[in-house]
Amino acid sequence: MSREKKVMEALAWASSFLTEQGRDANAGEWLLQYIKNWSRSDLIFHLREPLSEEDFREFETLVLEHGKGIPVQYLMGSAEFYGRTFLVNSNVLIPRPETEELIEGILQRTDRLFQSNQPLKAVDIGTGSGAIAITLKKERPHWDVWAVDISGTALAVAEENSKRLDAKVSFVKGDLLVPFLENNEKFDVIVSNPPYIPDRDIEEMSVVVKDHEPHLALFAGAEGLDIYQRLIPQAVRLLNKPGCLGLEIGHGQGKAVSEIFERLDARYAPDVVLDINQKERMVYLENR
Image (cartoon, rainbow, N blue to C red; front, side):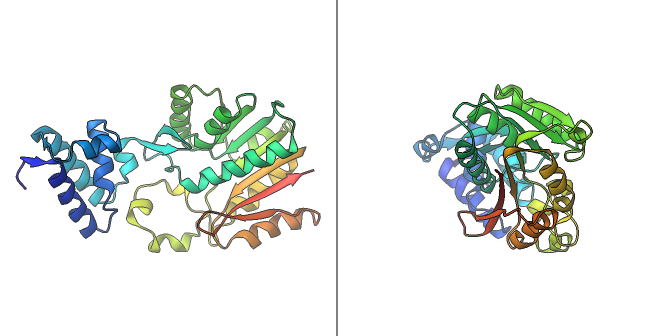
């Protein structure tokens, strides 16, 4: 391809190439906006202008890398979540829009359960990039927010995000809630987007996910329930009364996850909530 192309011609090439590779045709626009530090309106404004050879060379490299399966967010080094920009790399899961819905549910329920501006203690389990913990702290500055992850490299990303976004979160390295069990440390809010994909589903997944995002944050045994089996008993033990527990789940797991709660105590009546795509996505327990 000739190096002397207009922006619109470079984007047309990228769209065609990415479509052939089975990728999102719009990824070229995101990558060019990243290279040029443009907004979407900037991109449209410059469509008919020439793209320098240097810019095209960088653009071409990123498009080809995405064609191989590397996620756009890892190429750009960031992802948008709840209106904020989070640093991401291959050590952490890329935050998804569905998890924004998990946070919305937590905020709505805690607003019902507690008085306005009441200082609450919250913990995010398996924090990864820190997206959940940091968002909770930004949305509810009066909360004391903790975040735990078994991966030191993930915690390094989360801590950097907390500094960049000016969110005071306490980070702990550990396995689920184990660091808090010894002292029976209680929380008003417990939230987690744990691994929940069944191991057998790996072959059906896009290479963008299975070959590049951390498997530690994705897969959880034959049925995808291994983490819930360990986490839920820990969580209900450390959940204050009143308190709110929110978990992200995979579609079709609502009944199985609810049964884990019910086996612990028949009085537990968790609420399974559908996401915007009408798929089972969240389970909430309000401890009243």
